[in-house]
Image 1 (cartoon, helix red, strand yellow):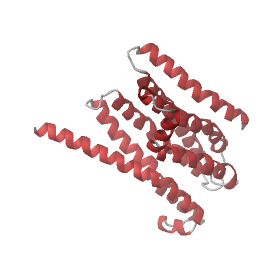
Image 2 (image 1 turned 180 degrees about the vertical axis):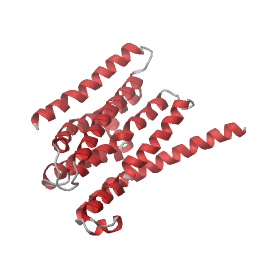
Image 3 (image 1 turned 180 degrees about the horizontal axis):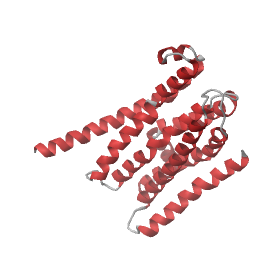
Image 4 (image 1 turned 90 degrees about the horizontal axis):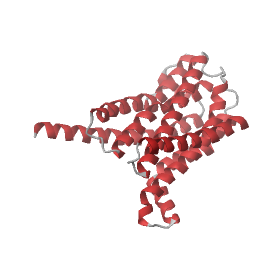
Length: 257
């Protein structure tokens, strides 16, 4: 545990620092804000790839979705804890860099950061203070398969990150931005929304009951936890759909014009 925590604490900030250094060397014309934004998204994408790989490994290794075990289901959570802490700091650093010319007090910058990123900060806090204890202690020796499923939700992150980088670099008009938008919606739908029905279906297959009966055959706290997890995903997915609709309307207007 301690070795994994220390590895994560070195890996993610180290990768972030290396990314900033490489970006400044490669594109000297970029602003600090550009470098920080791209560097932050790069680290998020790397973490997403690692989490997805760990999740798929766990899923493929657990034929019994309730009782089968895989060491990554617990070990990767320890590796993830330093990332969550680093990511909050990186987001704050981006906010500070973006507003530093306004000569605001640090307390004001921090308050603005919490307000503008309240959902993401809450999401990270829930993972650290609720999901980590549940996954590491409270669930006992059961459910590694479902922990692996939750890991794979990160598959959409690289596409979300690329979209934000392209916006930062004012590349919304490019074909890459449009194709990435389609991939973002697709991966988000499958890995962050339909993932939950899939987990219920998998449990139903294991118990020999239908999908609709599963919620009534598992503990109430499991249903509550899943509801808490999927709620922000539904909100973010609605925002992605609205953005995609605006992009489609703009493209159609230009074509008709």
